[in-house]
Length: 158
Image (tube, rainbow, N blue to C red; front, side, top):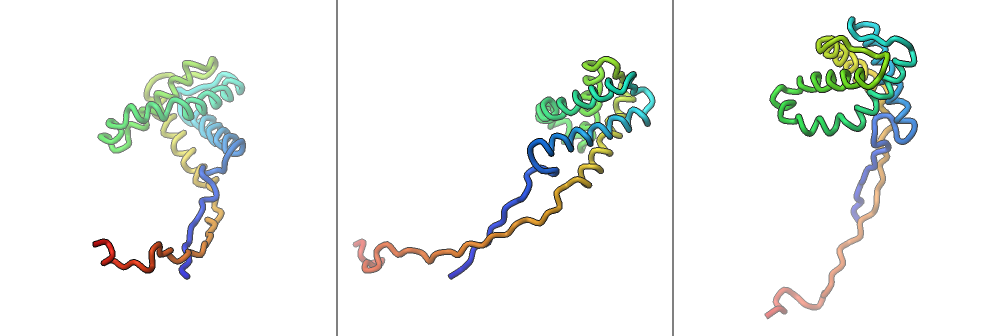
């Protein structure tokens, strides 16, 4: 009897599922945004609460609006070999600055710089928070095939 091996992925998202994944995504975005505020001249938060609000809004925009914009701009992303994603992220950062009072981006180039910093930091932190548990392997014995009409041979259809 042959054995068929199947595997089940333990986690669908890099950081788990449910509330834990949302909190991890929020913390990673928060670290990236505050690092961009510190490094990039032209991106400022007047208060800490404005920075936190920018983190929440940017996380929501990345969750809800970014996939739609990604699909709409897919030809440009392919033609630019992915570089248009930086422009897309810069536009989302500008939209965040428009929606959050106290968080400002002073133009397009600071938004591009902030988008690069945020993208790099989130990429690095996401690779560190990936679930490294092994994939569970399960085996199921395979039944032999059932012969429907053993008495009738291939010549009986005449």
